[in-house]
Image (cartoon, rainbow, N blue to C red; front, side, top):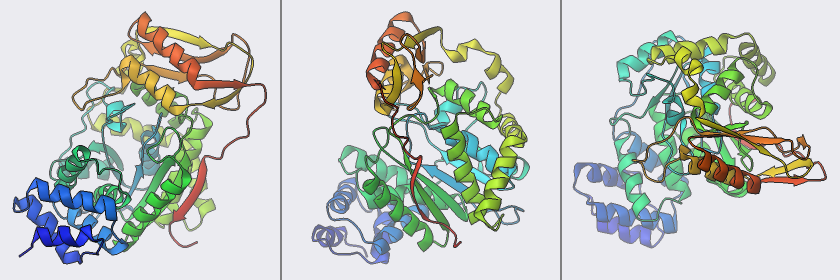
Length: 438
């Protein structure tokens, strides 16, 4: 029988736990035998003293088996998944899922809602009238067999121990632990049944991980968990000092994703989506070389098939894409141009500053119960490196009223830096780890 106090004493001293003890701890917590206060104390002990690779894998496995897992036996295409650690303007999943499906992959993507400066992938999709995100297991399988892709909410039956322990971490200041973060992310990725996973770990001012070293540490931990569970995992460390793409705000980001699937997207979003999908195609064995994988992804983005898969995916989940495209209600009631006070080049765009402007407009949450205004947001006309004239356009604000539009415009002017010299371009992909052997 498990003695939680013994485990607490052991972790307090920084000693490793056997896998069986970690599994018994999680099982005991789910069964009510281990109370919240002991589980919280153990999580804090991990936050302070860490876990080694074997413990982290064992903890991930215990979370994974606290609920259902998906199986895709009989599916005629490789099952893949993708995770992003999140960032300002990150609508990559809206492009990657239909593009991966067009390439011949199956991608059951479980996403979340946002809590903080901007919303999550589900919030963006909910700006489409009628869009259903809570699909049962049978519905999800039917859609994957038909369309090849789906973006859905996590069900209560999927890794429930993760949700419960994360809630404890939020209220006990133990969220910032790399082993616990890595386990929380990877248990959900493993539960989808994907054999190939690509991770987009963002770093910079607009990301959870502030610098490359911290992002690399998290990426390494997640790749290790995936490999230990028998999956092929590749991680990209990508820059998030400036927003991704030009649109920040729910309906605006969906529109930009649709433009990208038509071959008309911003260069950075296009490049990241192609990079992720090409890695999934290569690592899943669908194409033998990185070049062949990239060529397939480029072809499917250029020939319209990826856009068709997005149409099918939205229709399958009850969304009315035609109504979304036609409705001005999903593009803000007030539009205000933000212009440059001086000429030169856009030297930097502070992602946090842009996100704060969007939240101020009503496009983000402070509490999980907060309502989001899907129509508000910002479109950046000038990106870092772009030339701008005095009085020329920098951004466009979409707001519910004039006062909030003016306040957001003032914040944007603080976030966008103008320089007389053109800045040195920063690469989008800073590092990559793992993946299938070349």
